[in-house]
Image: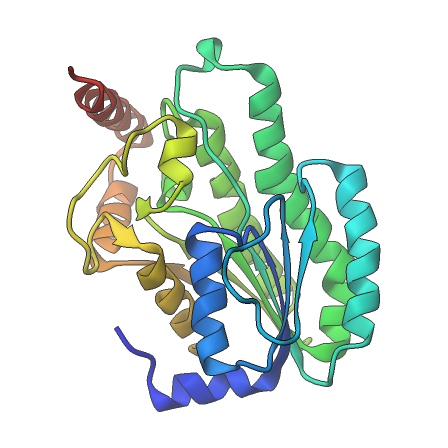
Length: 277
């Protein structure tokens, strides 16, 4: 997939991008893709580990645990100072950081589940609202990376799916709240993606699909390009890949209790297959 000339030209309006979780996966791929379009762009990455990739001549990495409210507040103050020195132009905020944890709720560690809520929800809202005055002054876009898990209950990934449902719905509501201000919000809903996410969640590999190309197992590079396209096309919501779009559409037509039950059966079976000797 390639961006059109008009889509590429759209990104000339941005002078700075703030991204969370840019050290790997989708976040890292977004940085790579946008630097190809705008090498001079100011990039501010917020994540625990520093990306291995070059952040550009004006790149800045801030090491921070975004699930820690005090740490986020401290780094946000430094970030606002950095943004005040950035050249004129619109601001692109990408809330990408997040994680999941596979298992039955009563068998999972409570502290990890609460940390997931802090990172997947609270940090997204906290950082967005702290940067909102700057966004309103500069104009720009807030991109929130949700998931296809946002469209249905996700047994064995119960908290994760619920956090992504919040991110999707909050993004859509925020986009309407900001209508007419020069700032937009976009919810991006990828399906299973080849990244470190599933390893961290307890899988040995993405649980569904083996081939890319609009399928259920896409590369982070493919998701990044579809995200940039959705930004340029001024969308409020995008589900990446036509197969993911079909699944979310047909799933919405079924009774939600059926969807939850089917999801439990599929995820349990896939997890067991991955751990066969």
